[in-house]
Image (cartoon, rainbow, N blue to C red; front, side, top):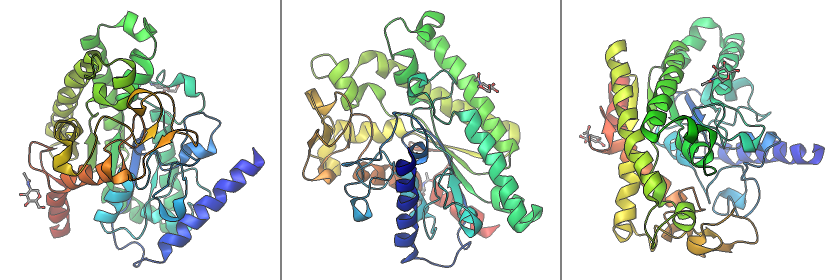
Length: 368
Ligand SMILES: *[C@@H]1O[C@H](CO)[C@@H](O)[C@H](O)[C@H]1NC(C)=O
Ligand SMILES: *[C@@H]1O[C@H](CO)[C@@H](O)[C@H](O)[C@H]1NC(C)=O
């Protein structure tokens, strides 16, 4: 355990050093805060006793120095690419990274933790992960630390002007409701009622985020969950997507969108910006070639049908060219796919971004 954590202190250090080479002055760009699950975790789980981690090769094979950092990607993840797009000198560090102190705090922080869901009982098999309520507790702690650093007014300004990204919900299906046949939640709720319950709990989390000072919050939905390589392999019928999980996505995503816009109406402003990640993924699943992918069904790294069984490890099949695959591992998009998703977040039409895209938000904020 001791050598393990030493390792990650070094990882964090190299990361900072590398990115410092391309640095522009600190605190010019707005701060960026990230909450959610493995789609946006940049390494918090490295510091926890959990099996939900991506800190060994081939994870990070296309990251600078081929470094496995805990990102569930071959290279950059969605927060990294958004961070670049908003002109940050470097991506916010994982909150548990010991290097996150002093001026680094002003860049923001990443609170996400692989395996978590909206509900506390999601991902219980991963044992020690940072559940949503705890991520928000850490955000409060973060604000106390920044207040000590720059004073109360400046700290509040930093948080109010920051961009926030939250990506959560997929695990409430795959690592809870559908984890085992006859799961506790599936005996408690019919699927539509479960979705209603999830949305009502998610709403409380977003409300708390607002109360903590967040004013621009990107809220992503899930992808078409039934079509990821893991589900094609485990539940798909004749090479098709899992109908049950597709049904779950089709119920969950539109209701999430509606709930965020309802919150905006109550607040009287555009705080929550919904990203239709289901549509973005569906685009490249239905026409992979249009996006330069050879496959949107087979994971680059994995084993079994569609490389969709088990984990991506050093013993797995590994594709030579990651940019030809929409999926890096059985559940997570490749860096290339992440870039396409962020492109849509930045400049997509209303079909993808509700009520507006991120470049419009950035332009609005720079005028005020
Ligand atoms: C999760 O657990 C925390 C701490 O016990 C609690 O405050 C919170 O209400 C719980 N959330 C849900 C959705 O049950
Ligand atoms: C999204 O962003 C682009 C700028 O990149 C802008 O031209 C476009 O009109 C925006 N679309 C919508 C629907 O807001």
